[in-house]
Image 1 (spheres, one colour):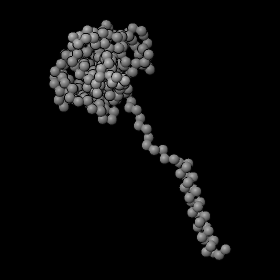
Image 2 (cartoon, helix red, strand yellow; image 1 turned 120 degrees about the horizontal axis):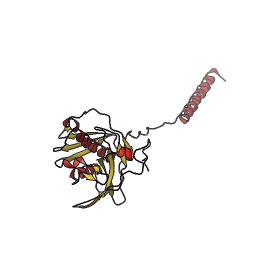
Image 3 (cartoon, one colour; image 1 turned 30 degrees about the horizontal axis):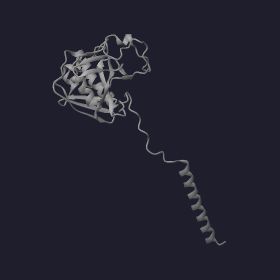
Image 4 (tube, one colour; image 1 turned 90 degrees about the vertical axis):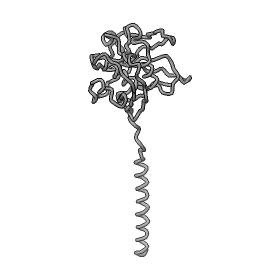
Length: 236
């Protein structure tokens, strides 16, 4: 074999080895593709739409007095006592408005209150978050059941929901009108009602609430820069 022939053979061998090496690397290190997005932390799954297009609206109401002692929650959201309130039913001019037993509860806030999330009777709506907030604002009763879930937001009948929009893990609630509060403790309750209802209805982990483009927290004289309140989903 001449020197030129040996050089050509060596070149062909090198190219072949390089191709095999690239093939081995390609087979051994597959493209992992885009990573699965992580589920947002501190979020509750949004309500499911039933087969008849109805949904039970999540309604955040102030927990009954002493509920943390009467129905404490374990670390995994399990109720540790059987005295939890359940299935309050009230008769209104529109008929019976029933809520099931609470499905979630917030950490303590404000004046050592908590907010419980209960569910409405099935309703047909394309926007559960807006419908749930309007339900609380239009509610003719300030309490439901015994022991009573409280709805201080019902006094703000001049409030209206302009929009509820989700951006990533954040839900923005835009209201207009006049919120009504009897003091700092109730201001905390109303703000937390709105934030919790919007978060549970959309699955978001944090929220912003404005009234006529002004942060509701600032209108109430409450701290605007706060960590999202923990919401514990209750299991049974």
